[in-house]
Image (cartoon, rainbow, N blue to C red):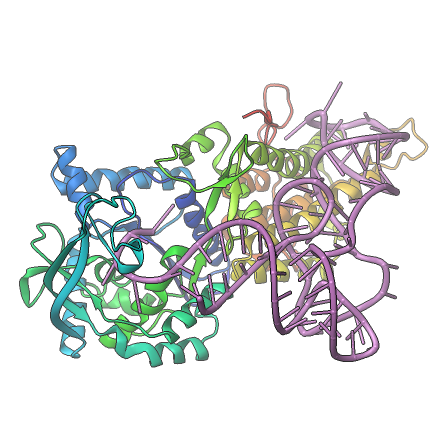
Length: 534
RNA sequence: GGGCCCGUAGCUCAGUCGGUUAGAGCAGGGGACUCAUAAUCCCUUGGUCGGGGGUUCGAGUCCCUCCGGGCCUACCA
């Protein structure tokens, strides 16, 4: 049994349900899921929260277009989002919608505490409104003539509204102290640098309420106002684990061990959010990890382009999952796109990576191993329980691999973790087969004939399959399960933490192939090769 | 304007506190093998580490500068 390691609470950003999730949104969830699965596998008490951000004006507009009540609209979108997350085998423990009562209650309680602390005050919010874009513009978004670049022939409308403001400006020094004392609070470092320089340049107070909204959360002491976007949205991280509704749950999991977010919203999570928590007297999260974006590589121009509806290049995650598999999708993004930086997606690249790493290397290793055990030993390696399978990687090397993969996963260097498994374990396993030539050891007509040696070689290979399955489980749970079910390994996969890799668990029975056989009497390919052309 | 990041083999990228002949995968070339998903294994072609200057016994790795690309600059994933 995995040893208990304490709690681990992680979150992803909540999404605007204006449109369906695309592969960029999925990237974040997969990265978080790998972390969640890894932590659970090692015995942590994990809570993994995801959700949707529903208290925005655009939701009301969109619902009106569809002639639906807002609640019905957001509920349906929440269902659609979760359908995608299920298909990608994301294992979030909860899914919060910010229209839920638990969020409203916690939100109001929190803002009241900030108000009582004296950090909220009323003043006029002045802004420039572009009637063409139907949105507010900041000074930096206007052109030299002080007009909207998209509508240069119209004057911007100067609007004034009485709003509540949060005294963010008072927290600059405390935030800088936080970044100093907790250098990994913001990851990766380049994002940290940006935030430090932003905070050093001075923070302004932020408006946190709007009047005349019909949808959203009331400011508790002034029902003419609704709580405005970020102040509301960020709070999902605590209301989702019971702040204001379930103290036991909240105390069990808060503070968050890591918030996974997109690099574009680093500011809100690394400056506004901790300041809010300081004001309300709530403990701060331990780490914020800002991942990069996924760009699409254009087939013709080879340019990396941003994913957007207007460009018409949105790829639905389901498209790839249905065509290939959830694991193939997860592998591509975790191996080819460094989590902290930007990545690229294109079908040719996907096919190359899939065929080389998954079909030819991992999948084929599994096929040739099981097939030889079936062919030469009728599926049972009699006497294998007495064999110590340490010829591909010995215990010391194995311990080093496990330590390296663990370190990389914990630091969200997913790409590096997978590379280690391929280079340090799978490559040596394939090389080992060529060196040992088990097909000759099993052939009575060959001078090399040595059935005991062959048995030992295949036992070693079955061991490599076991180790690989346990290591890659957080990344590719289905494939890992299929591989692990290939033999009668002693520890059930559900209990196979990294700690069960070395020292090797004792075998009470001899190894035998337990994988289901296909029509041909052979094992079905784990990853059937795919055609490179789209 | 201010700030951050990047520019390493055809492609995608590793290169820790500066240290010996700069690495990997894929692609290309040659060979071997047949258990396996025409898979695998071995050998091999290929780089003035964007340009220039500097610090140093020694720089892809630090400093300056120039060129090229991306991003942030406040309430817009």
